[in-house]
Length: 302
Image (tube, rainbow, N blue to C red; front, side, top):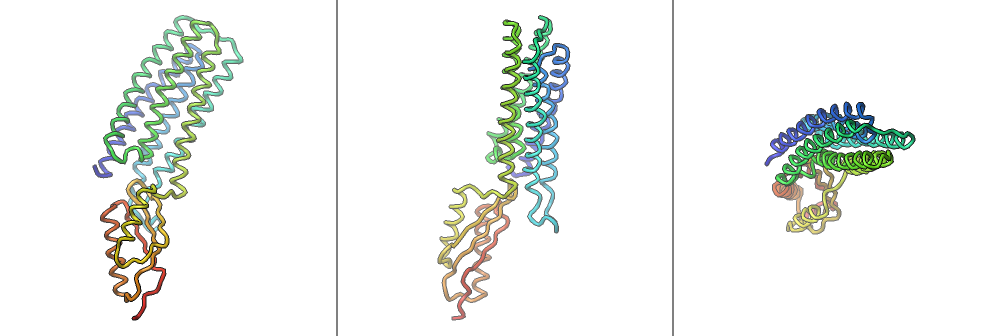
């Protein structure tokens, strides 16, 4: 599967998640306002945050495919990681912080819902669980069917959001049910706080991944080792002094190598060797579309 087809599938996955979250957010908010449930209101904030994040991810899919230009000669691949970072911030602020607020506010009050309120809340959460589960299944299927799927920050964010949403709904249902049975609001407040902790943790993990890519992360050690082995196997290379790599996007990687060539090569031979080595690297790893070779020793005229 090429990158364009993968992006189309990811876009559809994000749109499915967006549609589900918008409907669920409205249902949770209405149900939360009617019942006064802190756990349900926390889940509504969670769904609103997820909806906004899906809009960020759609923007990342579109902007990251822009061709390279004079101002951005390496392309716009890192746009995906920038918007993924914004999505992580959205989860933290709109989801995690609001859930903490709802939890602490519930602990300071002694609210008790009517039986009909509990019933409405549990029905809303049941429908939300079904919708979130459907979206999660689609994201998991796409990730399993795509070799590079999990490395896509857009798909990874949808997976994290949907998995967190499923766990969050289960926590909210458990807290509401225990509040109903015991009459003690601490159960529902605890569920809201637990949802907040979960969202903050997910936001931290997604933000850390995006940060690593934005500041320039190298390819994995196994791939780096294979590139080095290919270079060292060239008969004209005496030694690979250093090898530097950096991911520029999902399908774009910078490779820079500093190496010593065997003595006795004239300038024309050096040029031909460098062209052949670059072609060999890019043919073996198409994502290595920016290859730079630095010869540390000047060629001998002899």
